[in-house]
Length: 191
Image (cartoon, rainbow, N blue to C red; front, side):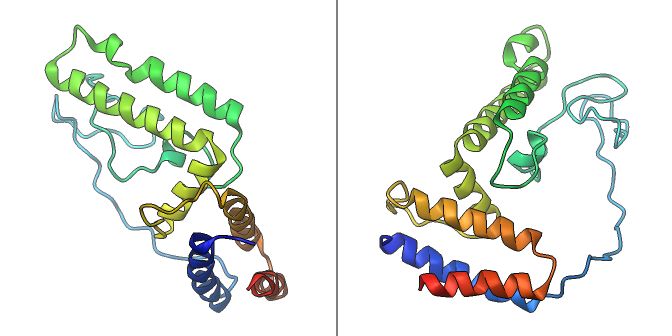
């Protein structure tokens, strides 16, 4: 039913499923570590966390560099899920471009122009990736550490990818061991 790339992906997914089934269905009580608040490149003051404006210094209003640890879902204020509200995504895209587009930084310092270009590119890439189900699914797999080999005809296996993402969502929502075993039976039935 599916091509070679899909079978290889299913094999990787089966290994990940076994890991999910081995975990307990309890919430994590990991101790919250204290992180060091970043400093503004322009004024040197500590930027206040949680102020809702992660792009600009709260003191001097200088555009800050992009956060290299931030994923596209976080940037676009979307849940890390295969299902994305595309209208909400488009509104967030437009909002971010009004904040960071290079045209708005033509009279600013070279540093802010550079950061603006980087932010704008990142926002464009995030929007393009999350807008289409196939690229969104591939990105979700990448975030889980599953890379699709170069040359894989994933477009031919797009239905397979959609099914895998739906199974991943069911796994994430599973509230009991029985629900997880049902998902495992479904996957084993495909093999």
